[in-house]
Amino acid sequence: MSSLILPPGLILILGGLLLPWVAPRFKSLIAIGFPLLTLMMVWLVTAEDSMTLTFLEYQLDILHLTPEGRVFATVFSMMAGIGALYALKHARTLELSAAFVYAGSAVGVTFCGDLISFFVFWEIMAIGSTLVIWANCYQNDRAYGASMRYLLVHLLGGVILMIGIAFHVANTGSIEFTAMKADNPATILIMIGFLINAGAPPFSAWIADAYPEASASGTVFLSAFTTKTAVFALLMGFPGETILIYVGMYMVFYGIIYALLENDMRRILAYSIVNQVGFMVVAIGIGSELALNGATAHAFAHIIYKGLLLMSAGSVLLMTGKRKCTDLGGLFQTMPVTAINGIIGALAISAVPLTSGFVTKSLETSAAAEAGMPWVWFMLVAASAGVFLHAGIKFPWFVFFQKDSGLRPPDPPWNMRLAMWIMSFLCILIGIVPAIIYGILPYTLDYEPYTADHVVTQLQLLLFAGFAFFALLALMKRTLTISLDLDWFYRKLMFGVVVWIKNHIPQLIAPVMLGLKNFGQRKFDRLFKVHGPQGILARTWPSASMVLWVAVLLAVMMILHYMRPS
Image 1 (cartoon, helix red, strand yellow):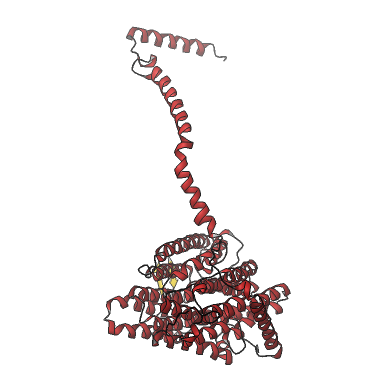
Image 2: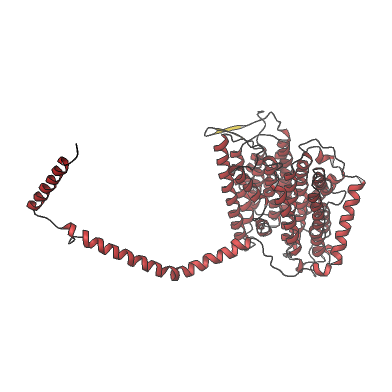
C-alpha cells in the first residue's frame, strides 16, 4: 500500500470527531475540506492498494476497491460536502459532527472486503444517523421519540445481520464479503439485515417516521446514506436473487400510495425514498449486468436529486416553520430560487429527458425488458407515472403554487441557495452528458438513452400522468390525515396489549397464584408431618431395637442367600 493512501471513510470520520474541538472560524474549512479530501482519496485508491487488520484469527480488509464501491463512495463524499455547505449556517455542531461520522462510515462500508469490518462500519452508521436526528430534539419535541424508534429498528437489523454473519462464518470459515445465495439460514438472515436498512416491508415505515423529524439539513444527510448503503450491500451480496424483485415491487408501490395520501411535504419525500429504493432492489433482483448498472446509476442520481428535493423542502421549513401542504402555497412569489431548484429536483426524479433520472432509471426498465420480464417492465413503467404524480407534481404544486397561503418568506441564506444550485447543475449535467455516470459503472455499457422510442414513450407517460393529476385535482387536494402503516401493529397494537396485560394481570393471575399457594401449602404440611421434628421419620429409637432390626435383616439376607438356586 502507498504510504499516502488511507481508507477514505476514516478521513470523514476524523473530520466529524474534530469539528466539536475547532474554533468556529475553522468550522467551514473542515466542513468543506474533509469531504473534498475524501473524494480525492476515493479516486487515488487503486485495486493494488490494501490495508488489513488482525482481529482474532481473521484478517480484516478495510481498503478493498471495487467498481461499485467507488461509485457509491464518490456520491457519498459529494453529498457530505454539499450537505455540509447547505447546513453551515444553521446546523448544530452535534448534527454536523454526527453527519460526518455517519457519512464516513457509509464510505467505509463501500471499501470493506470482509463481513466483520463491514458490520463495524454498518453499526457506526446507525449510531451517527441516530445522533443526526437527536440533534434536533431542542427544536422538535418529536425528534427524540423518532430517534429512539429509529435506533431500535436499526439495532434489530444489526442483531439479525450479526447472527447471520456469525452463522455464515461458522459454516464457511470465511469472512470474505462476496456474492452469496439466500439458500440457507445464515445468508437469509444477512439479506434480511440488509433489507431492513433498505426500508423493505414490514419495516418501511421507519423512514417516514424518523427522517422528517430531523432538522432541515439533517434530513438531507439521512436521505443519502442508510438506504443506499443497503442497496450497495444487496448489489454486492445478492445480485440476481429473485425474491428481491417482489420485495422491490412492493416498495415501489407502497411509496407511491403513501406519498399520495400524505399531507406533510417531508413525509411525501420520505415515502418517495422507499419508492425509489424499490426500483433499485428490483433491478438487483433481475441481476443482469444492465440491471446492476441501472441500480448503481440510479442510486448515484437518486442521492443527488432526492437531496435537492429535501433541500428545497428544508428551506421552506426553515423560512416558514411549516411543513404541511395545507399550510403552504404561493411561495414561488418570494422564494423563486427554492421553487426553481425544487422543480428541477422534481423533474429529475420523474425521469424527464435531459435530467439525471431519465438516463439512469431507463437502464432498469430496459433491463427488465431484455431479461424477458414483461410484467416487471410494465409495473416499473406504471410506477414511473406514479412517481411523477407524488414527487414530480404534487410536492412543487402544493408547496409553491396552488393557493396563496399569504406567507411571504424570503429565500434561505446564500450557502443553502448555493448548495441547491450545485445539486441542480449536477442533475442537468448528468442528464445532458450521461457518459459522466456511464463511464464509471461496474460493467461495460453500450446503451443510448436518447432514442426516439425512449424519449417519446417517457414524454407520453409524463403527459398522461400530468393530465390525470390536474383532472383529478379536487381529489388530490390535501386534508389533515393520519396514514396507518404496518408499524401500527408494533407501535400501537402491541403496546396496547402490553399495557392491558400490565393493568389486568393481577386480576387474572391472582386466583391462579392463590391455588398454587394452597396446593404448595398442603404438600408442605404433609412433608412436615412426616419429616418434621415430631414426624415419624424424625423420632429417636432405642439402640436395642435397632440392634434387633439389624439382626433380623441379616437373618433374612442369609436365608435368601442359601435359598438361591445353585
